[in-house]
Length: 461
Ligand code: NAP
Image 1 (cartoon, rainbow, N blue to C red):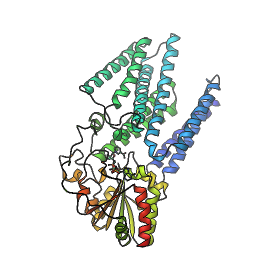
Image 2 (cartoon, protein in one colour; image 1 turned 120 degrees about the horizontal axis):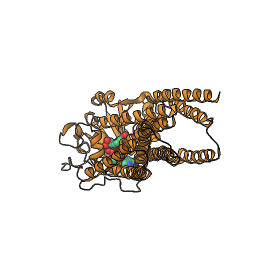
Image 3 (spheres, rainbow, N blue to C red; image 1 turned 60 degrees about the vertical axis):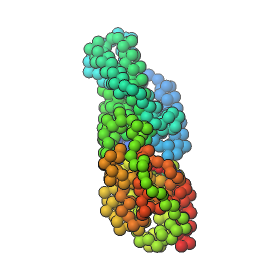
């Protein structure tokens, strides 16, 4: 009877995870998808707690209590702008759990002198290796994103060769253990090396590339969980881990495609280091500063305005202010649209999440391919804390490090207004020729502050 309930709850959980993922693929259904996945997780936990092999609930309840308190605190107090580092921490916890389960399984079987068959040892080694490297890799990603360690790539001569050799030794031990699964010292050497490899893997990657790395690490954590499922003969872990593993991998590929870069370039290219940050540094001309009141008048009498948000919108927390400005403009009969670049901000969907929080209707958000043809008929394209995603060098300069990256072509509009604090560069560290074009006016200041004052300026225009 109990086995029947467990199987049913696992089946329900798996179905809910799949439906949840499907829901997450569209902003309009994302919230419902999230709730379905949460309910699925509850089902999986209930099913697991019914297991007859559980001898005491003390430690389980202790873990559940600690995890719930930490999770609740993270959910309540971590701001939206810190979401990437929050995700990195979650990955570290999940991967550490997978590694610990693998280590305890190996230890248990070894001390009892039982034999581990090759298939179980393959899954177990895979789980521990991926779990361990994801733990330290995610922790370093967290520290970089949180500014606890330098965010720029840390590189040295022969780094890739050293890292690859270390990986080869670790994999070598893993393969040996599949055939001779009796050596405890070798097993723990493999675990230790995997922990070290996680750090070395993330060290040469700049903090702005972290979202790609994290979705890769997410994918590793998922595969580690799937391997745990094989070791424990737990179907829901196999299904959920595989879904997690492959969705993370697909997301990494999509992000790389949106930046026109390869996964190897992200992992080994040390993008954002001094060596790679070359481009239109010899930019000629000056930036034209515009007065806030003039921009207010320009917006008030425009027919069509397109907002292009970027990372600065997130740091300024200007999503509510931009919505207010849009409301005021729409009341005056101005058509307002938002152009969303797939890698604007610092994580996939960053802009969508922020604008949804401010109740910007989803129907006003346009993807790159949809909005680009509209710029030539746009009176004002307002760039709000975006930089790289509107850099025309990506389109016009084949020698630029971001050449080929699809951009929002705001420079084709009748007028461009850029809201930023000063001369700060974007994530790529490159100069942006857009700011020097005659069509562009620079409105300096914090984005939220400028937008709030623009609301008043438009009302008084
Ligand atoms: P960006 O190129 O990083 O530029 C952000 C700009 O915002 C800066 O130039 C900064 O200039 C300005 N800014 C910062 N704080 C501000 C504030 N409080 N008020 C007003 N302006 C502010 O951002 P982006 O155009 O969104 O491009 C994203 C970059 O991240 C791309 O290069 C992309 O490839 C990379 N990336 C994104 C993802 C992802 O998943 N989204 C993943 C990996 C990499 P000032 O300092 O002068 O204000």
